[in-house]
Amino acid sequence: MSECTLRIGFAGTPEFAAAHLRALIEARFNIEVVLSQPDRPAGRGKKLMASPVKTLALEHLLPILQPETLKDPDTQELLRNYQLDVLVVVAYGLLLPQPVLDIPRLGCINVHASLLPKWRGAAPVQRAIEAGDSQTGVCIMQMEAGLDTGPVLYSAACDIKPTTTAGTLFTELENIGPTALIHALENLEALQTKAKPQEHSASTYASKISKEEAFVDFTESAIQIDRKIRAFHPFPVTYTSAAGERIRIHAASPIISDNKHPAGTVLAIDKSGILVQCGNGALRLEQVQLPNAKVLLVRDILNNPKQPFNVGMRLGRPLTA
Image (cartoon, rainbow, N blue to C red; front, side):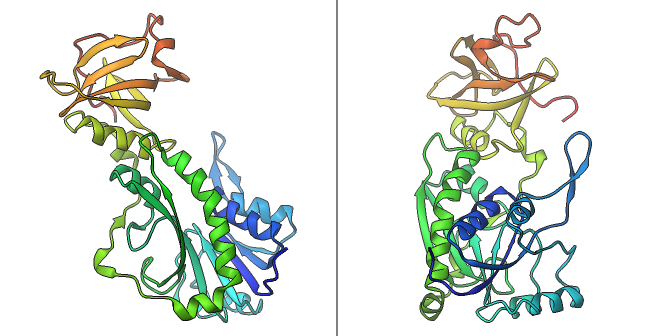
């Protein structure tokens, strides 16, 4: 049981944030109020769905606020009424204006999924994999008006392996992040007195992932494409086309190859996968998804008479991307 007596507010939205809130609840921290984004339409029926953070808060009978914005003076006054010592922010998705940053006695702290100052911004997990980084982690940062620019109070690192995907990395960060957050909260005032500013000149920016980026350009190297496939899995998932059909690529492996065929040429097809020429090297597509079909290993689709792959064909952009 934690001995921390801080009055804590928590602001977050997706499952990554819920993992941190769950850890605080299990450690018996004093959660006075939870903020999450308003319910959004989701699924085929586009029904309004509560966020993972809201769902967890309701399960534990925690007060919850879902403002459209934190710029509203009435919302700010409502937050002041909770007399918070600190507001913990994890993947909340709304801007915290200066009046809100000033409300808690000890300010607001953020759990950021990178080793700051590297990969400030919306998609640090995906961009670290895409860039070929060998290490990442989480930082507990004192928030200020700038985007992820505040001093780091505490950090924890983990490795990025050659097979790491965004999905598996989020899972790993969900394991180490809550432990780092609990340590920071239990030692918050001491850590704040020792906090050092970030080295802003060393910062990099992790822009938001767009579906348009998910197209695989086979003129790039096999290693670069493999990184993108792993960075964009499980969302938005990279894609190419075969015989005009959109094909989603869920798993692949880069292969050393000195073939000189045009980029995108299918070099070989067997149970191990579909070997495709790249700008440098080749890529073996191992797990793909045909239109309106399940995700399958290549060996499980080769006997399908409707499978579109042939040796010598060129993979490229679908007619409707």
